[in-house]
Amino acid sequence: MSGAPLIEVKDLGVRLNTSRGPAQAVRGVSFALRRGETLGLVGESGCGKSVTALALMGLLPESAVISGSIRLDDTELVELPDKAYCKLRGNRISMIFQEPMTALNPMHTIGHQVAEPLLRHTGVSAAEARQEAIALLDRVGLPDAAKRIDAYPHQFSGGQRQRITIAMALACQPDVLIADEPTTALDVTIQGQILDLIAGLVEERGMAMILISHDLGVIAENVARMMVMYGGTVVESGETNAVFTRMGHPYTQGLFRARPRLGARKGTRLKTIAGTVPELADLPAGCSFADRCAIVEQRCRVALPAVVDVGASHGVRCIRTDVSMAAGDVGA
Amino acid sequence: MSAPLTASAAAAAIAPGARPATGFWRRALRHRSFVLGAGLSLLVLGAALLSLVWTPWSAYDIDVASKLHPPSAAHWLGTDVLGRDIVSLLLVGARSTIMVGVIAVGIGLTFGVCLGLIAAARKGWIEELIMRLSDFTFAFPAVLSAIMLAAVAGPGMLTSTTAIGIFQIPTFVRVTRGSANAIWAREFVLAARAAGKGSFRITIEHVLPNILSILIVQATIQFALAILAEAALSYLGLGTQPPQPSWGRMLNDAQTLLFQSPMLAVYPGAAIAIAVLGLNLLGDGLRDLLDPRLARER
Ligand SMILES: Nc1ncnc2c1ncn2[C@@H]1O[C@H](COP(=O)(O)OP(=O)(O)O)[C@@H](O)[C@H]1O
Ligand code: SF4
Ligand SMILES: [Mg+2]
Image (cartoon, rainbow over all chains, first blue to last red):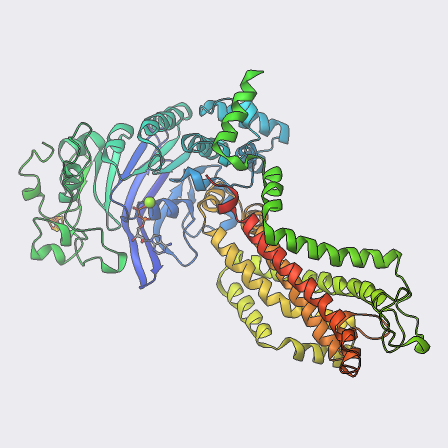
């Protein structure tokens, strides 16, 4: 937990071409992670979480304009040529995707797909890669790994497939793991198992992890630090405990009130945040949450609010924290 | 030994298409247009192969004394204006037909698929350039380009077939780029890129295998179109040159005698129709059979 950060992101911005012209999908995202540290990214769908992740992976469309800085150890990743990026992806920085159904190529055996990164990034022989793939599949809890290594993706269930994609992502012992909604497409009963598996692997290998989810519950249980995203900006960030104890941003508070609760009587309406996540082209000037905020004022729309420190390394991007945090017991 | 049994039983329960080969043929034999199309196509192929080892008479020997004979025990479908045996001409003509299809589709497929894959993988101005070029070629009438090529290289089967092949490139470019773009947008390609694969490897390992069935279907249909185009060019005198028999040439020869011996036009016409119909039905059948949505009912 000491020394220089493994990955350091400073003032990351992403401009994308949308059907309605170029638009700023991500603004002013900054964070740093050391080995073994975990960071959660939470927000409704369309808030820019995946775009942030893909920017780190260098996988955005060529037309995307990325500003700011992403440093992995001493390498600057923004503007890094694709050839050099290819050497890092899967090797030093890896990603797990939401849809295990589609993240595997239907035409290749799972053994091939797990062994492939090993063959490419490390100097092992085909036989060694196969052995390593079996060991990995075993480690991620795929039953009968040695026997099923030559089976095709469609012969596995969703949870098993996600285990396979995790094995694939971890094959080369990456330093940074990005998990983008790794359990969203899975059955609730399996979600916990997969998250536990990821947490175990992160700890075992001392990776840095960025876990992306729209589910506050998942974030609460799996990461030490968190960032709440809305409209492409980080509206609140801090230690997970601190944020859950004293939520400062009206959006975080809204997310918390809208979370589905176990044991709620069937048919009880979920409280939701009024309105929907705007399209990029429709983001309001100033605070991006202004159109849905209950305590919005005229001055909220003037400029992007600055981050206000409301605790030790706990920041909130809102100009009315005095009001939003006054009630104190939003969680109740 | 019970473990592998349960594993494969579970696999079979999850996906009926676990063993694609047997499943494919079982479904194929129940598919009417596939069976009919395959049958007709095999008929043409069989005729071509047979002509390599045996024809009732020589398809090249001219015997004007026995011209325009009606069907008989010696000449099952009679003889043409030069006294050549019609059956023999049809058999050897099948060979030209298949040659034409193979060469034309070979050219179209090779160049079209490569360019389409490059366009999809590289994007940007390279894609733009490839697509504009193929639009340009596509806008050029096939017959016109065949005539121009014939003017330069002299008429003949190879010239006309090459022209047809070139004309088919844009079709393959479009089909390839369209379906390859769809694959590039799939999450497993993103996952492959996240695992560090470059665009060449992704094209070979992920894109090509996943668009293969579409290309096979398209090739079948283009094969039929090539046959039709070559027949038309031969009919115009730009394709296969005498004495090499071809169905298009037979039609050309028959036109002057259309009222005297109409059957001389009917035979090659029917042969062309069988080949084209057979390939189209085969293509339709393959389209259904290779469609992964139908093949792997989840
Ligand atoms: N390739 C793209 N081109 C244009 N717009 C995009 C692209 N990818 C995502 N977007 C837009 O960027 C915004 C953020 O998307 P995303 O990061 O996927 O959200 P999420 O937080 O759900 O992961 C959305 O409005 C989405 O429509
Ligand atoms: S800045 Fe204004 S609009 Fe934005 S969250 Fe705070 S109070 Fe609401
Ligand atoms: Mg997302």
